[in-house]
Image 1 (cartoon, rainbow, N blue to C red):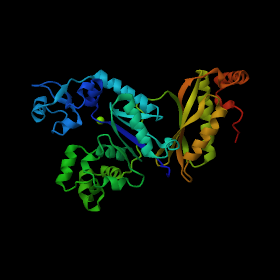
Image 2 (cartoon, rainbow, N blue to C red):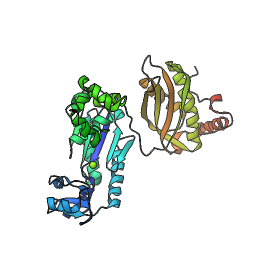
Image 3 (cartoon, rainbow, N blue to C red):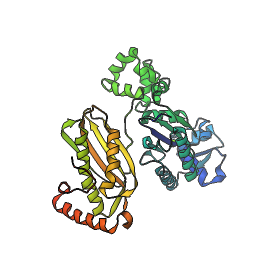
Image 4 (cartoon, rainbow, N blue to C red):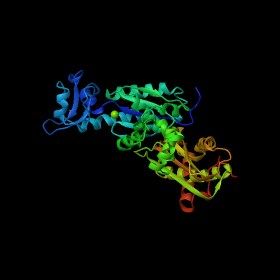
Length: 383
Ligand SMILES: [Mg+2]
């Protein structure tokens, strides 16, 4: 299976509140469950899928919901229960992904680009994640794999509940085109109604030349960003909402550069300083991220795991240099380079033999006094 340049996973639990109530109280299984507060003043917070088929939806007065669905079983909201479920889902997702971005209690994005060597088939990855989340919580989710966040989100929304969908690279625009405009994130119900009044119903209409004058009047220059989304072009990175413990340095060059030697020298300098800090705190790094920003301000990152947690820079440099070389695009000028060390764990004695430890301690003392640039570990050739 060809490798994807970027692979984004979006997961969304199906009717999380109602489903959690059923997991917590199996006697509710098979009943028409909705979460909410009682009539006359109460409203529905969340409805299970069977209840939705009666026309019941969130924010509806409970009295009205009971008229639509007389056998409805109302359960009160239980925040601690949802939090426990959320925590278990996080733990399950963290076993797969280096980082997750939870956009709500039951929705997350994850970058699976670097998991492709382990899961060359995105459907197999999706299946494994769905199963792991179910095992951890008893909750079903819908999961989508695509090259960007927008397409993954739209795809998951279109395949609920208990769905698994893969939108292969190159098919994004075709997938999006027939979908209603309101399914595109960023287009709210009001905007959607306005667009429909103008005869613009499908996402594909947003990139139709005949619609462009109307759309430009509506959105001005914002149109071009929306058209990119409508074509499925979306480079928005996954932003971990809980920063893993990490240390990092980055620098913007005075002049953009396409010189690999300059990029390597800069990263190597950062590595000396960061590894020193990691050793000083008696830690070791399990992974690292190389970051580049090109002259057009496009940011690319490569995150990798070390074979084992390490804090001795010569042992780290080969992997970091390889990651940099795989990230650099020929004839591209870069304005910024950065390096961070993450997955920091307490260093074990076994990391080096005693002799190396003493040598490193002596070197760290010198770095502490004079800075990293005066001294370098062996194994990192000078330019
Ligand atoms: Mg959900």
